[in-house]
Image (cartoon, rainbow, N blue to C red):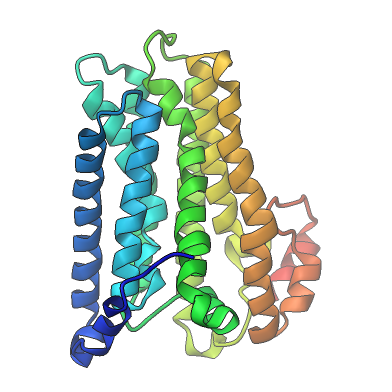
Length: 316
């Protein structure tokens, strides 16, 4: 079983309540934790002397995850990990650019820019809604109740380590495009870039539509059925999943021999379809008015062609 120093869970109890409820303080602590995690990860990779970019990034992401986990325990809030999903791809791409400086090709620059756009969108979305250390994701609260005194081992394995592995797999195409000998940019690169950018825009618009819907007091407890949400129950997740498939297309453009990097996009798709979506829908069925009817009429992810009357009915 994972050993945790007894003093860590008690740190939160001694924190000033005003800091815990202060959004600016929470964001500052969160950002500081990620800076520390990045520095420790880089130092750890350098200290081991390991060779091989893939091994180095694997070690770095593992070390950074452990550092963020320590902060989660110390602050008694597993949502400290939430930005990690969107920060990790930029850190990995940045590391490949840094270690390969002088031989960086256009494809790696393209992928790095796409990862930055993805990260800015998703990380910004988290911090816009996060009120600070007083808030923890409802799924983590559920894990606390179900796992009891084993919560922190569960948190490390399920909330911290598992997503880290998923994102690491999703970033395998970044490794592929960082290798030397790839062909020049072509139509498949353009297609992949269009898919990634379209996915980022899709997720952004979906989140903005949901935010606007929730800002209306009369909509509390109701299900959104307008905009993109009239065609897909989870358009934001569709955008997330599509991002990794677009990235894989660029890996194929580097060389068909990197077809195996599809493992990342496939794993993330399976995770959302069989874990993330069911968890969200279980909560929605219990808390949102008319969600069962909405679910019966609206596809989970991929929209289907419908008549104007059907679309109008879904938005009612």
